[in-house]
Length: 177
Image 1 (spheres, one colour):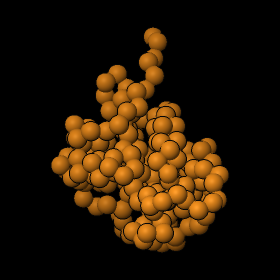
Image 2 (image 1 turned 90 degrees about the horizontal axis):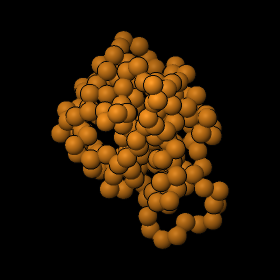
Image 3 (image 1 turned 30 degrees about the horizontal axis):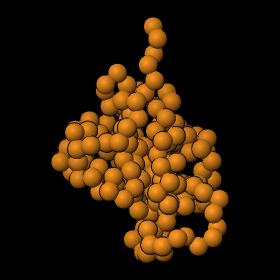
């Protein structure tokens, strides 16, 4: 059987239900995200629209089925951070370490650079070897760990912070972002 490559495309509101379904087990069953209530499809649609307006939200399709997504959002609210962003990727259960996360980041990271972002930051709840491996493969470097920063499932969790320079530019950015 010949396997078709994944389709990576911009997410739309029509993808909100699939993205919410992918995210729900992370919320309910893991500490990978510190959210405690899964967002409904309407909330996910609002998140997609917000991310797409300024950064990006992508989905990965396999044979017409959304099996993962990746997005970027502002790193922090202060104006000086406006050239930095935070990135995340989530895959349907059973799709981790299959190349889908890599395929999403291969589109997302260059798009962020094209849009003028200089630094991408990833925050990873530990332990999470798959996520740390993915980010390392793209050149994200460890810059610190928040110890016992989140309480979920009756335990404290650490969060590793990694970052990637999206461009080698060190000069002042042009104009407002």
